[in-house]
Amino acid sequence: MPGEPATYLTLKRDVETREMLEVKRSKFLAVVRRVDTEDEAREMIADLRSEFRDARHHCTAFVLGARGEVTRSNDDGEPSGTAGAPMLEVLRGAELSDVCAVVVRWFGGTLLGAGGLVRAYSDAVTLALASAPVVRREERMMSRVSLPHAEAGRVESELRSRGIEVLDAEYSADVSLLLASTSLEQVEVVVAEATSGTSTVEPAGVRWIDRAQ
Image (cartoon, rainbow, N blue to C red; front, side, top):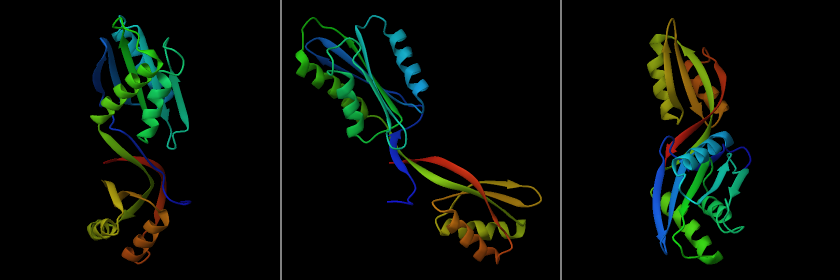
């Protein structure tokens, strides 16, 4: 709905999942990983090509952006449409973004046919995703408020009780709280009520926050 903060599913950062699938002696190693940019995705692909130089194919797919607006796939020598595109459909079907999948294939001597390849590449990515840790990314409005030391604890408790997150506190002459919320207006109202209008809220941009599923 218009006005609601953006949210989408992705994988936990810095966790790579690998699963092996064997079909008629061909081996399919699926690797899935969180990536935040196209450069990161291509770096992952290059690393796996280097690691598994003996494999015949390194097929790839990745999805980027809060709305999955960037998609790429590559069959890497397999018949057109039998590897990268099915892999991409698995990622999109799982409603994931900011994720890259690479399937490394060692040919086992038996041709699988177009349908067999589609199933193998799809199944390999599905298998890897089944054990990959999924998180939800949520867009939050960031803000700061400065409070007297004597008031900080009470105001912080009030903010938390109203669903506003306190991400950090800096202590100097005053206490500066870094806040995350779905609405800057909500923070302004709560702070005004809790401080009788003596403290003001300063916008501090937008941040994406990972939540466990």
